[in-house]
Length: 385
Image: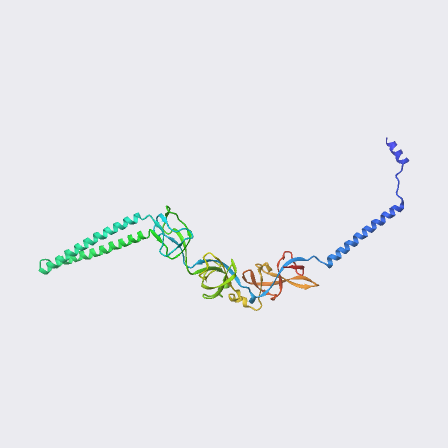
């Protein structure tokens, strides 16, 4: 079989292509290779001439004295407010107003089971009556002996003894009267009355429940003066003072700006680096529970913001703000395009998302606030709004 195959290849040798066809194919391959290399060089040259730019968002640095007003949020509340409760423990037998009801001063809010207090009052009054009778009897005995002493039928010692009895009975009557007063007070405390006119803003108990001393029954929000409590950072406290007028607005009524006045400023905070409470009085027409924003300006509150070399930038513009060397990327024009440069800065006061910085920055410089990841000095960027 192998001999047959060898004989077949000998008798029928493979056919070769003509030389001119080989020449044409080689020319085509050379053209393709040259074109590919030329295209690669052109693409590389294009990359060199037109590097890829990174899209970044920018913001303009401002002078420290141009800091915008800072709006602190809060919720309006009545200056007079209370969670009313019984001074006695007992079972709640009735509750008058419900959530949202308006009550006048002295109105009955709730009642406790007063049977125990009523019995105690009856016993105190009975003891007072008995002491009063014994006192009257002692006075009669003393007056009779006094007449006998005048007639020489009794001794002075007997009169003095009866006078002591009268004095003791006077004290007993006074003590009985005090017990009656205490019993009347306790019976009166089984009735809970409104300490001022206002609106019921919360209900904590229902009839039939047992309430301990001091457990709230209702919450009242008083009529009249309204205030808002703000949480203000330490950097602003030094520039505020009671009586200062501030701007107040209601987010639900954006066009409405009213005047408020600082009432008190907290002189201490609950823990280190915490916020300080500031109370601001509002217009009496403001409803308790309304969302409120109060404007405070950092330039009036921060002495550090008055340094001429300081500017403020958004905190997002600072890379590694808590590190050893915070930096800001500033835009500048170079070769007809926008590029960035690293600017080391020192961090100052942070207020409402803007931070005071000191370095080779000036008001009006454009700084990168988004897109710094992977950004290097002198990189080409494309600013976007």
